[in-house]
Amino acid sequence: MKILIVYAHPYEGSFNNAILETTQSSLASSTHDYEIIDLNKEGFNPVLRKEELKIYPQGKFLDPQVGEYLKKLKAAAHLVFIFPIWWGGVPAILKGFFDKVFLKKETYEFKGLRPVPKLKNKSATVISTMNSPKLFYSLYLKSPIKQTVIKSTLKVCGVKKVKWFELSRVVSVSNKKRKKMLAKIRKYFSKL
Amino acid sequence: MKILIVYAHPYEGSFNNAILETTQSSLASSTHDYEIIDLNKEGFNPVLRKEELKIYPQGKFLDPQVGEYLKKLKAAAHLVFIFPIWWGGVPAILKGFFDKVFLKKETYEFKGLRPVPKLKNKSATVISTMNSPKLFYSLYLKSPIKQTVIKSTLKVCGVKKVKWFELSRVVSVSNKKRKKMLAKIRKYFSKL
Image 1 (cartoon, chains in turn yellow, purple):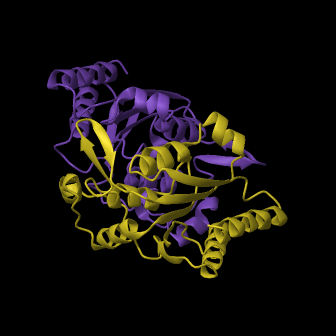
Image 2: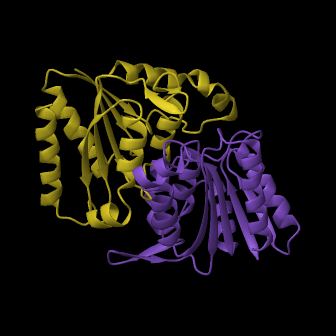
């Protein structure tokens, strides 16, 4: 299976980076084929400019990185998103990945007022970290990542099977607990 | 009253631009003092880099635009955010405004694990547009803008009084209806 990992943390000493490395090493010892888009390292510009917005409805783009990423997105059978939750949502650089790469005609289309998915036969794994407690995020904020990334983006475009690892309080829990989180991720990917 | 408008649409022919102009002209004939941050026109870079993330907890920054914006943010008594909803959330350029300008120590602080607001005596108006129907956004997606921008960002930082104009189906409603939306906004700002 072709797997595309989209990674969105700027600091290589972060827990997100440990998650990326765990994911990578699990997949390296599997039969899957994987590649990584490291948005920060690759210097992705997340801003959708006026000239780009104009041709967005035709599924067209100007930024050559968008072309590369779109090709990888379409070729993958499984998508993995690894990112920290900032202010309840994804970092700007990942938001721009959705704004710019998830083009109309390529990832969805409209039949009248109804969106029709164009990304077929794909599944996804979403791994998010946050410092907030889980109940604050799920009960009080109604899990914005689930509502936006999973329901409003991936599912609308046809990626229906999504597994979400919601890692909370990552800054304040013990090292032992963080290692447990990584072990769970390792186990999951080794069985993917 | 000092008002700061943060505007995040790249295209000057958009309905968002009509909202901006309506807001501006209403405020121009009031006694309020206002200024506009046009994120796209000002070429704001929404990416929080590794070097910036490192000094973020000290309330420090490297991008000079962040310094300017932070000064304006702190000086304003009322904040206005005008933006389109893309994939359930704010455009990347506005997400980056929160990621980079809403610095720790400047907009919030921690007492143990509890966030303590640092932006005091401010109110806000949030004006969002979308093509989706209102019920899809509120019932099915649980209003992510309310959960992230309003509750998880503004309220956490102390901006408790927030009025939200949630303009839906802006692409498909009649011109008459769009004019009505603008009239409502004009009336609101003329009474602010």
